[in-house]
Amino acid sequence: MAARPDTARKILIYWMDGLVVFVAILSIVFTLAAAAEGTLSPLAAAVSIVCALGFYGLFPFLLRDAFDTRPRPTVKLLLAAVFAVAALALLPLDADAASVWMQTEGLWLAAAALYLRPWATAGLTVAVVTAVTVYTVLMTEQAWQGVLLGSTVASVSMVVAMLLWRWLWWVIRDAYNSREAKARLAVAEERLRFARDLHDLLGHSLSVITLKSELAAKLASKDTGRAAAEMAEVRALAAESLAEVQQAVHGYQALDLDEELDGVRAALEAAGARCDIVARADGLSPAARALLAWAVREGGTNVLKHSRATRCAITIHGGVLEMLNDGVHGEPAPPGNGLRGLSERLATAGGSFSAAPTPAGEFLLRAAVPA
Image (cartoon, rainbow, N blue to C red; front, side):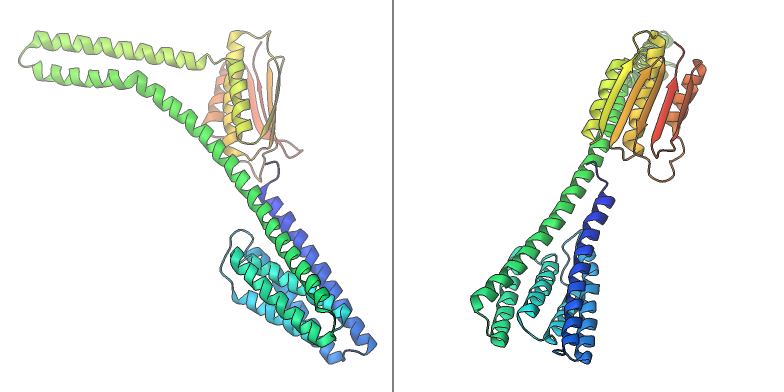
């Protein structure tokens, strides 16, 4: 995902906070208007406003407590219901007040839906809508069909909107967690590949060397000629194993630049980051290309392990590699062994290396090799 989970969570919650503040202002304005018209005493208006502020003040806490998980209903949820009923019961119940009732009713049901299972939410909604409809019809003598329809639409729409709101956050969060898991998987697969290569190269040879060494030690006092022959085989196996390791290391050092660019692109895109590559390296020597391949591999690993990048741009021109990503978060960690080793490798070959945040809030890895 391009959006950061923390940022997306704040946007969604603050948006809901803004909606609650808007409804709270409408409720308080209506109460003040009723007091100004004389249909509500100043004392009743003050108590109603205090209770309304208690309800709307609790709502953000109810929202945050249940935005990441579905906890059990709490005392705060019950207290919010008490505040809502107390605030509305003091208002003169007419057609205008009925709309305030429906808004407050819908908001409380939306908060309760975050704590309850779907079947419990449906049952509670039916009960509350029925109670509000009966009370409103008895107090105002309005047609019950209109009151029931308005109450149902207000309550159901707010409950559905709240559940969709939280579901959207869960989708964003799970997608980001999946991206991080893919990044960790890519790093783990690379480590497994190294381990598998070493095991295939040395596992059998070292086992045979161990057995033959033990056999030679046993034969040393009984059959020196055979013991010497076994040790000669041990030496030959050791030399052969050393040659295999050197060949493997040489092959690993002689990385292919195009393959590394393709591999880094695939790993970053699997982790959810867009990777743009512009490479002009045709005129470079094989040694320079191998050095840049090393820099690409280490830079890509660094992005996967230590950043939360959503975009990475890789450019190679004139023997200079630049990897720019937007994954900077706070103070960057000190360079690890990989970057230090890469810096030493490039310095030994006569090149240069740097890796640091940019003034624009990004992270730039730059490696220059002699052409």
